[in-house]
Image (tube, rainbow, N blue to C red):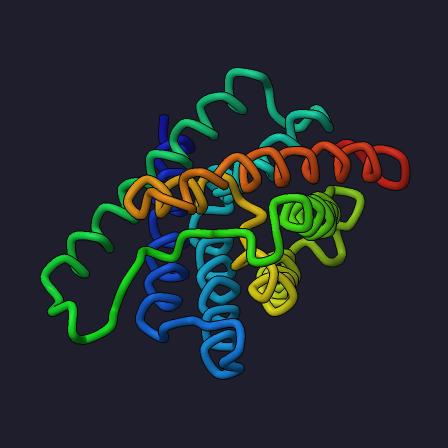
Length: 224
């Protein structure tokens, strides 16, 4: 049970700090400073969580990563299902807390939303972006934590976090960058409207990306 609770905690922290920063900075894809700040927040939050709960659960905090692990044979079906459940619970709880904080802020302060993802250039474009970015991310995750890379494993947290930072720098302009169904589900529930209508993109895209990454890694790397 500890590893499932660790996944919930990790996803809570990741979602709250990442989406919270996006909201606080008023992240806008035309404002370089807010984009960089948001990317840094998600990347650093992931690094922190990898070194905090990595030894307990592996710090997936992302259903796409857990799917990649499952398809590579690193975790069992039961763990995959419960990991995803607790990841989503963590993200929803984080979004609820963030929404509660914002509810007490005067609307005139122009702090809106909970960091939900939407497709800026249509769902087809968004789906492709999420698949490609998630594939890259999960490949790095699988490789950085592989036993075949024992020499670099202690640096896995940095490799994973910095990769996510770069992914956000690329993806914010197109989809707000998700590569993580749980991180998208939480905010979408509280924002509704377009975010909820397009949520399927941010569930299907990352899961396809995770499956592709698993297939690629099994072809070039090690299952463990």
